[in-house]
Structures are given as structure tokens and as C-alpha cells.
Amino acid sequence: LVAHYWQRFCVKNDTIGFFGPVGWATLDPELRGIEVDHGTGLIARSEVFFSSWSIDELARTLERDPGLRPWLAPRRLPYLRIGQTRVRLPGRPPQPVSELERQVLLRCDGVRPARDIQRELAGRAAPQQVEEVLGQLVRRRWIAWRLEIPATARPERHLRETLERVGDPAVREPALA
Image (cartoon, rainbow, N blue to C red; front, top):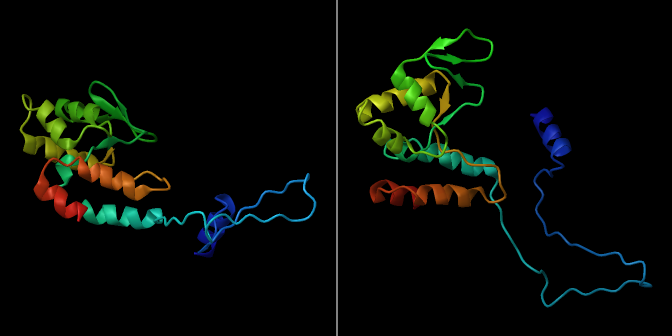
């Protein structure tokens, strides 16, 4: 625990539980003495930010809803290399892959929702089969199929935008509530 905080403090130049306010000043060598201009109010603006871990935890809770799963975009993990009949992984022998698994993997780009992948492969496999393959690929650690939130100053905005793209109001509305 101590090492975690030490790393966070040193590497990211982060503070540990700092609660403002923050004041900024300009040092001007042309001026003699001190000149203070506090503006029209006590503070220029006030902003509150969520810690990214709290939004990540909210995302993990929301993704437990099976109705949300088809709207999430699975992505291949970066160390995976797809061949014609095999998948290559670092430190392991090539793994055989079926044509359906290969077609699903090729479509796991982190942009296309699972329901679009199912629709694209409708002539080759039933939607349930594609969902089963996606589940197997997650268990094999070949893809990530979850609600991923990028590390930004406003992670809640990305989460909201992702949830607003869910086309089924019965799934979308409770998630946004």
C-alpha cells in the first residue's frame, strides 16, 4: 500500500488527497513590490472531478447487466496475432483457431459492438453462437469485452457517451439513471 502511494506521488507528480483551492500568480520582474488583482469574485471558477477509479467501478457494476453486453465493443488484446488457421501469442506455441473464431477475432476492433459482429456474421453463424465464441475468447484472454473507460480528466463523460449509444431504451435508461 505504501509503495502504491509512493509510486503515485512520485511518478505522476500527484497529490494524496489534496482538496483545493488552488491559487495562481504571475511574477513580473518589471513591477516593484506586490500588485494584487483578485478579480470580481473570491475564485474564478470551481470544478469537481471524479477519481477515475470510481467511474471504473461504476462501469464494472453496469457491465454486469447482460442486456448491455451486446452494445459493448470487444477488442483484441494487443499481443495477439491472427493467422489463417492459428493465433500466435507471446511465449506460447501457435493456437489453432476455427474459421468462426477467426472471423469474430478480425471484427473485435474495439469500435464495433457485439451486436454488429453478430449481424455481420449472420450468414455464417447464429447470434447465440457468436456470443458463445466471444465468451470463449474472453476466457482465453484473447479479447477484452467490457465497458472500458479511458484515463481522462472527465471519465464520466466518456461513460455517459458510451451508454447514450445503447439503442435499447430498456437497457440504456436504467444505466443512465
